[in-house]
Image (cartoon, rainbow, N blue to C red; front, side, top):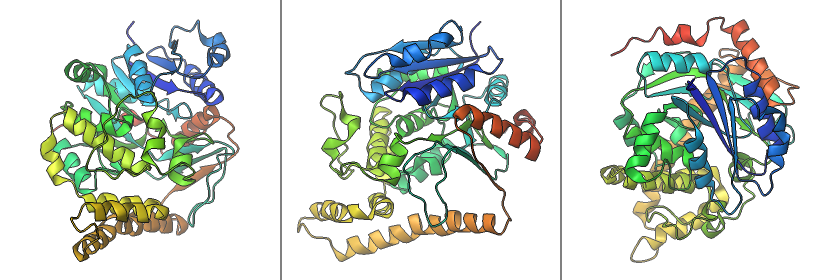
Length: 408
């Protein structure tokens, strides 16, 4: 039988985490789900670790030796998927088993894409990530933020315009069809490949696919409910690039360019290696591939600059140099400074106050639910803990909330 849902994992040199992810999914007594493991590690040790599962018809394992770019690895993973729908997760991530019921609902209601919330997150032990003013970093921990279970349909044109006004970065703040931690009809992905030559291009698979899918998906439904469990481990780029920031700042040193040949960087984006610029460049790559250059006219470059500096203050001088190089005088003008300050106020500072600070205050005052579950050594334990928590605290299953959706 054709699987209902393919969970695709593109992995490289993170064998222990990947095995745990596979084990957690295959532990489910459900044959409508399929697990794809596309391995580009330096050796075939992962295959040995998965040997006892290779006879399970739900698992497809494929090894491709280096050199092979990360985007090629993701494309190969999607190619192997035979399910009616596809969900891409990282090798340190997990799922809420209810994702199967949610996918069945999507099929029965002719939904091209279904996106859940990222309200359940798992931190592996020894990530090396620093704590923040609001959050102490604790390993082997599942944290669950309050969610509303609200279900609604999205106007994708509005989402694309909002993304461009936000500097073509931080795409997860907006409603998009998400291949990464979302559910996408496989036939939509095949149509993109037919038209462009591949499922994904650019450097970042998550934002590239979100924009590309927005140009093909007819019906996107969003539910404020966790369908997957994003994970963070010590080898995660979320840590090394986003939190610790231990990577080189030179764009030439970005690992995303490895085995990519003569990649053309978007002229609108500063040649700085950080999360925000990789996202922005991939966003522009998708817009050009989809022939939506009209949206580039809505791009707010100062919002991109503000987001970069806010995320990593050490990049301020590099951003300022880029701004100066855009001017004939090679200097930052008063107009530049005013527009950058305006971007800070309406962008990252406004979001910090209205979302993060107030959200944390609500948790402290116990106005909003927040659950920390500790001593969970693997993603499998995190999956079981999330299932138990949802039954205890929310009681209604995901399809109850989905069935409340009233089609337009």
